[in-house]
Image: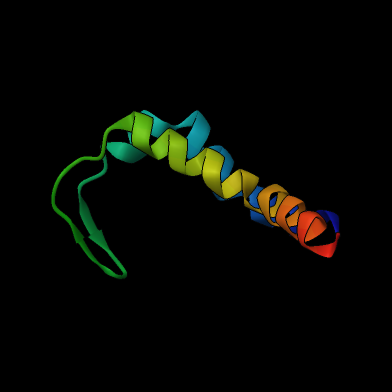
Length: 66
């Protein structure tokens, strides 16, 4: 269980803590090339969204059960 949590939060936390270096990456990826840098703020917001997805799903599920 703990390893699954760590595996899930590594990418979002990296996006939040290292948003500027990650957003500045330009180059090849497995899905194609990144041709322009992404603003660090957008990378940070994306990291927060990824981190909060399980909470959002749990809230929606709890509301739908009532």
